[in-house]
Image (cartoon, rainbow, N blue to C red):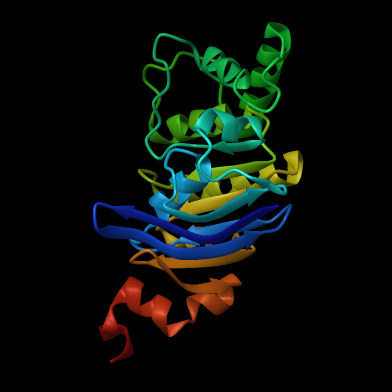
Length: 239
C-alpha cells in the first residue's frame, strides 16, 4: 500500500533522513520507532506532505505523492494525527471532528453525513460529545485521532500517540489503534519512541537512528537486535 524508497532530507547541511526505505502492506500496523532525534518525525512529515524530500520516492496505492502538499496527500486517503493536539477550542468536540470530515478523500461530503460520521467516530474512540475546554491529555489524544479518522483514511499515520499519557492510558491507546484496524480496516503507521506498549500491537517495526534505518522486522526480532538495544539502552547494556 505504501512504498518509501531512498527518502532523504537535508536541513542546511544537517542530514536528518538518509536513504530511508520501507514498505507497508495493506491491513498492517507498522511501528516506525527510534530514540528522540532519530529522524522519525522528519520521515513522517515527508510522507504526510508537511515537508518536501530532497530525494527519494513515496508511493501510496501506486501513486507518487512525494512533494505533494498536505491537503492533496489527505485527499488520496492518507490521514495523520499530530503529536501535539491543537483542536479548535471555540468548537465542540463533535464540531471539531465534523470539520475534519470535509478534508479527506470524500471532501464533497454533506453536512448531515459529516456530523453523522463525526458522531460514529467519537463512539469508536470512546469520546463524549462535549466541549473542548477541560479535556485532559488522554481525551485530547482521542480527539486528535477522531479528527484524523473522520477524513476516512485508507492509511493512518499516528504520530506519538502515547506522549503525555500514563501507563494505563498508553495501554488503552494501543488497544484503540488495534481496534481501529479491526473495525475500520485502516492500515496504520505508528510513529513512536516508547517501545514497550507499541511492540505488542504492531506487526512489524522499522527502527531509525540518526536518520538511517538500522533494523526492521517483527517485534520479537527487532527487540533482540544488538543495534536497537544499543541506541535505546547504550553500550553498557552489553557489559
